[in-house]
Length: 293
Image 1 (cartoon, rainbow, N blue to C red):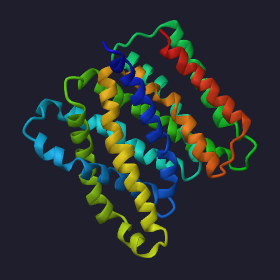
Image 2: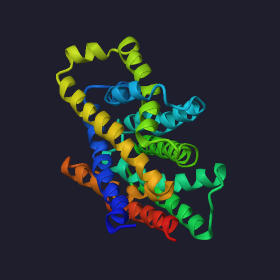
Image 3: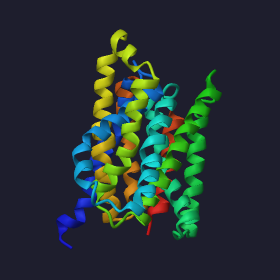
């Protein structure tokens, strides 16, 4: 393997961190005009439109027996997290959501061990437990706030989203590895995106918001960037990384995501307390133990 080939996975990690680390602030901007379900539906719709040309070309080639797995990978990897993160960020800061997202590698290991027979060594068990302690510290960091219970409840939505990511990542790594990343992303997003588009226009007041809310167009612009880059393009890149390496290595992008998310949070003057930083460090230490050879 050449030096460039060895460095490629790490270059992809950095690129994904920049894209996904910025996703949390983009969601905050999208929520200025739209509610969580509208944001999620619009995000998925835009991502599906991006992949429409690929859908047309792949229709005859997709293995029919893989359609259910493709749908499930999209549902858990994109559909449910899109809503859960948007709902969570109606209460918690974008930086906190980015930090909690670091639990993804730990969730991937747990799901992989329980359902896919992945190895679960003592070091990895220690890493998972340490990561969970860090998550508790992060959630308790604002225990003195009046709205602490609400913050904790909405923080748990992000934890559930990381479990969804872990299911999708393991499905791709163990059940879809023979398919191309573009094909996987095209069908997993299309089966969610186009029904989401119908729901967005038919069952929500999306058009009314577009006509009356002063920030509607700017919020939609941020959602468009989120859908095209954060969902469509990034998922292809991540799927390729899964195929180049494995689910645990690929999820290590979460080492870098909180740094980008924190930078955006500080830029927006979000309140970051020292105990939150401590929680992030503990979580990252757990992720390190999980990934250590």
